[in-house]
Amino acid sequence: MPYSVNIIRLLEKVEPSTREVLLAVLEEIERQREVTELPKRNLMSLRKLLKTWGRPLKNWLRLRKKLKLS
Image (tube, rainbow, N blue to C red):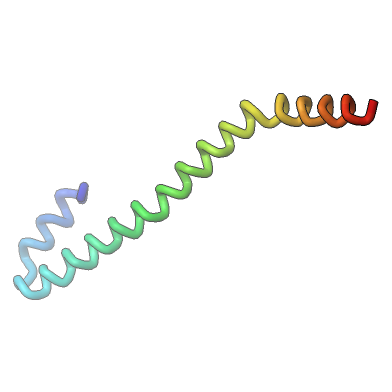
């Protein structure tokens, strides 16, 4: 969990029970961030794949259709 030094210093001043709750909240935020970042990475990979293969695949499908009609 990469948090700023300022947050860590502030947590040191808080009562232990409150600190425990705050740390749990920070951990949950971190988990949620990881969950949302994964689909974004997957979408970026899919976009890259479609850019690379989209046009050649489209051309191949057109040619295939054309050959079947002839």
